Amino acid sequence: MNILILGGGGREHALAWAIARSPDCGKLICAPGNAGIAAVARCVPADIENPAAVIALCRAEEIDFVVIGPEAPLAAGVSDALREAGIAAFGPSRAAAQLEASKTFAKQICDACGAPTAAWARFEDPEAAKAHVRASGAPIVIKADGLAAGKGVVVAATEDEALAAIDEMFAGAFGAAGAAVVIEEFMPGEEASLFVLTDGEHVLPLPGAQDHKRAFDGDKGPNTGGMGAYSPAPALTPEIERRAIDEIVLPTIREMARRGAPYRGVLYAGLMIGPSGPRLVEYNARFGDPECQVLMMRLAGDILPALRACAEGGLEGVRLDWRPEPALTVVMAAKGYPGAYAKGEEIRGLEAAAADPDVEIFHAGTRAENGRILSNGGRVLNVTARGATLAEARAKAYEAIARIDWPGGFCRSDIGWRALSR
Image (cartoon, helix red, strand yellow):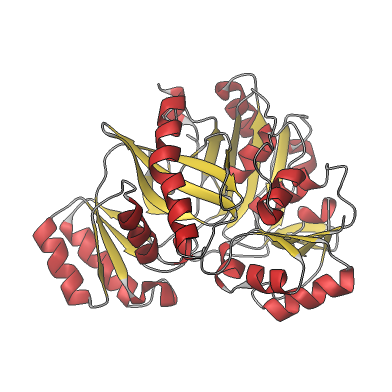
């Protein structure tokens, strides 16, 4: 089977790496890809948010199955167009992807199906939003309503911080995503990431993971797209997972089907686990990044049949095999991220860093030029390792990082600290 993966980040590298091992994988293409993905798939340029361009690429390359990695093509309706063209696609419809594309929509779905989440209010006027903050107090959470690449969230410890976040969002810091804001109550607890595959009716839970959103050690600094992750997540116990599926995920999937927009693909539920149990922080309509990287490192079997079952139906009875060993990934980012950063810096030492068979380096923002690997984004590398214990996986990841020569990069030194301190 000829397969096309849309995207060019660390998540897509991990998916390509896993799919390439499937006995059913024939030609594997990634658009646009990156320097790391080029080792397992042919990378081609394409406007992946343009449905007509994606379909034309599929026709030219005789593609049988498309795996959509990032959220933007989903919000642009690429999966809808592919299905209308008779091309199987992994990824929800534009209507279903609103669970990520609109914070307001996700909250409305939670209200309709009774899924536990934070109290919320939506504002299109900055002064009304500020009045709400002053009446509510801090801590409080300010979110850009639309897609903001995982960075449109401010957990404000003070009223002044919340008011500044409102000004920043309405001033255009996150583009059109900040034309409206959703303000939520602060939920204390520990975050964890729950992923399920679904064909619109049945669900197949994947192992739990935990992300690190803040830029700096000790969970300090601005929110990012993710600075590291590990799996499994001790906070996501079997009982918490069961409750999250029964109280949050399944009611949401049933509500989406009731509305005529069945959700098919992978659904990410960001959870806050507190004294009363799990509550929903947010939904994503795609694999988390960098959580996908640790999940693929733990995958023991073939993921392709499960992805196809999501797209074509028949997920019930499908199973996936997972390695018992934990996995951990550390993001190496360009200095300045998530703000302004440089591109085009050479990165050396990658082969030596990946010499351990339990280490994989998934490229997130790189390009190749004249035999050199250059930085080409904010989050640039995902240094990922397995180990007999989480501590061993972490040690292997940081040992690999020590072999990478990139003066313009930085990373957190404490990925996995919550699990290791339990």
